[in-house]
Length: 267
Image (cartoon, rainbow, N blue to C red; front, side):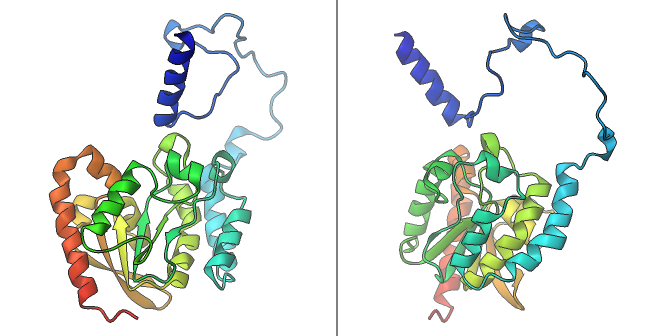
């Protein structure tokens, strides 16, 4: 019984995105004291050589990386395989060290529709593919409802290629660092239409502050490599799983996508 309970607890931890321990012994934070055997941190033996105010923050590190280093690097990627290798070798983003796998893309490169989500989840991190968990299964059903398939018609990626710990929302610094890779990804994939799954993707690529409820259902212009790609924002499948009532609006967005594709000359 104890073993079964322990396994059930571990499964629950994984479902909640808890996949790393921060100490060798548990600490009861509600008691206001350390657990038996745990040592309370004492004062440092000596002051640090560098003042804390002078230490770079994650945001401060992201700006030069994105502006001064990342954009010239990604410009050298001549195809999707080269871009994937660049991301696999890119060590400046801290998320790379906590993720299990790089989650680059899935579907058909060069497909007419490119879908862009926010970040990988736990199942995506394990498999190294975007949208393969519960939200991915819903996405596949949504695409099938208008005659599309990831094996034939769409190409899928995320803003971030690595999973944030605990499935937390990406920070502004992380997004800033990864956006140059994503823009080059769009240029190389050269889709006819973009679909933003959730407000984060639309905000990051369009530089707008409106939320998804205001952005969804409207055709937007996304600049990419000297051309403009029509883009449609809709709800993220994970949101639809939590809010089934929003599926009616998502269905309207899917019909708008189908109508737009019907009017395009697709090679």
